Image (cartoon, rainbow, N blue to C red; front, side):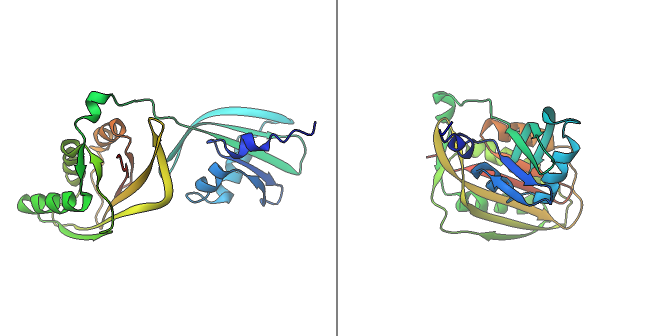
Length: 231
């Protein structure tokens, strides 16, 4: 068959990588290029070997993987000889769709002014030493300001009083997200602490973020949000 079917794989939103036996990459699609910006190829090669079938063929394994803002619920690993092994990761899909009524509570917002307002408020009742680095060229976009303040309040509750907090606010160049068929640019907000933080609020924060297509990532010293620039 002469039909070129590779474009189906190339444009797939699920990453696919074909490894050679020496760990070099023989082929990867566009989604895999984004993934490799967040995780080393060696780690994905090891993942493929770990979940490879015992005999030639393919094997699907349900997993719960998250690399930065990218999440996957399953992987398929396959090989038909000892020279190549392929891995495909199945991306988690956001299930929720906002209604027109819900979108009505979104307000055109200057995110830099919103952050300045929040920092001024937080300094009234807390002793954080906050250092904000921001991109002043971020254009206005729509956001649910009340829910954003709730996210910020719960986030700051996780840090220790008196801690030095480094905040970074900037556009995520070259990346976007689809929200209700619209492709939107992303703004990255990161808060990093010097002291370990209390992670007990993280599930509540993540739940609110999911309602607004905000990707949330956290560890013991850092919180990171990817916010869609809704127009």
